[in-house]
Amino acid sequence: MTGFSVDWLTLRETADGRARHAGLNRQAISLLKNRDHELTIVDLGTGRGSNVRYLAPILGGIQFWQLVDADEGLLRSAIIAIGEWAQKQGWSVNQDGKRIAIDAPKGRWTVTTELADLDQNLDHLRLDDADLVTASAFLDLVSESWVDRFAARVASSHPLCLFTLSYNGDLVFDPVDADDSWVADLLNQHQGTNKGFGAALGPRAAGYLKDAMANRGYEVVTGDSPWHLDDQSHAEEAELQRVLLSNWVIALKQWQPQHGSRLESWLDRRMAFLESGFSTLRIGHEDLLCWVDDETSLPH
Image (cartoon, rainbow, N blue to C red):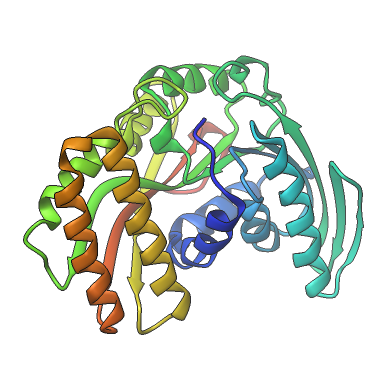
């Protein structure tokens, strides 16, 4: 899978947390409360472990987390970041390089890591005993065949699945530049290139997973979870825009070098908007919650 830096994952975490769909979170909590045992949770493409920091306090109770990633450095960073986060809350923490145990007022959470290629090793991941399989900002990177394999993999044990922040192709810039639509179209085409799993689903990811899971007997609900990046409301969002726009242009120039000059000119104009103190960017994402209805009486 295409690598992501610790700095980038750290920068985006706050915006991710604000964007996630609160209604789907509440529904996931209601569904999981029907389980009469401690929760086993598998987090795919965990990065720095942001899902633990977001979901563990919301879910509460006894939880066993398995964080899976192909980047050993990110897994080490995740354990460190989770430990620092828990200590800042004043909670009891016991950790080593690959495992951390947290005693918090709302529960006891044990977190372990597993180094694995999520494409090559999907069939070997320990999903059969999971109550919840989750991933954040991951689904748009994978291919149709990966989603088909994943849906088949969970069909027998049918854990709850929560995939959040899947890019859906919706980009809105303010102020508007004449080349915004052109760049957005290029970017959405680029999202379909190989990100380590074959041709990526990109903006089609949420819809494809919804159909694949429904075909395996799952109920699926979706919710919008867009980033609203405003350089005036939140200081870190101006930096997030700078890094994001710059990285887009770098990737697009590598992919379509013949457009390099036009892309650089567009980036200069967008950066000027940022420097003037007026630039907003809406990036569309979708969250998906999937469950097997015969395990719960929750209405839908």
